[in-house]
Image (cartoon, rainbow, N blue to C red; front, top):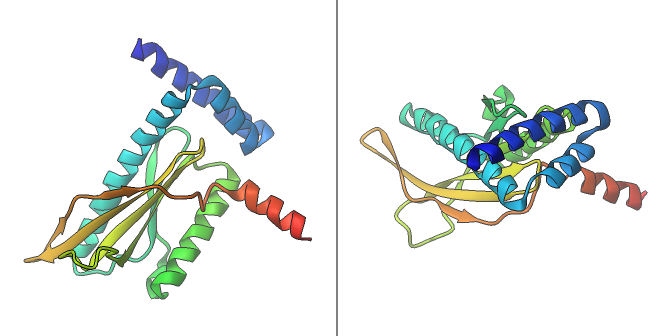
Length: 191
């Protein structure tokens, strides 16, 4: 039974990819939502989120253990679930809050081009739990073209040159990358 669902998911994704090329992102989202159950969409997004999070943590661990700062970067998934890490050289020289916003805007550009199906924006922030041992957390804001969003806050520490990660805290988040249509409507209304 799951094989049939997975097959239907793959076929629907191929159809959605074709629709994006011919009729735009909104049509693909509608087509995808019509052909998937909410559960299937959520499972598909969760699988992509897990893969992006794993790749992001491996990337951050390598940098932390090399003594390099972790500035804003992203892991993205295309429509075929191919994953890649995105870093922008100029971000390394920017203040952290500016670097996050530049990466966010860069991801929006990729999304508008229709080549990205899911994003994982990663950056360092102060640990919101003041009583915690770890002073900082890696924030992984994940969004999917079909709607699901979440953020994972992962505490970390460097001990004897090794990055040690704590248990991530999963929190709800609002879309900041895939909310392009809403922003454009707001801008048009304001004019």
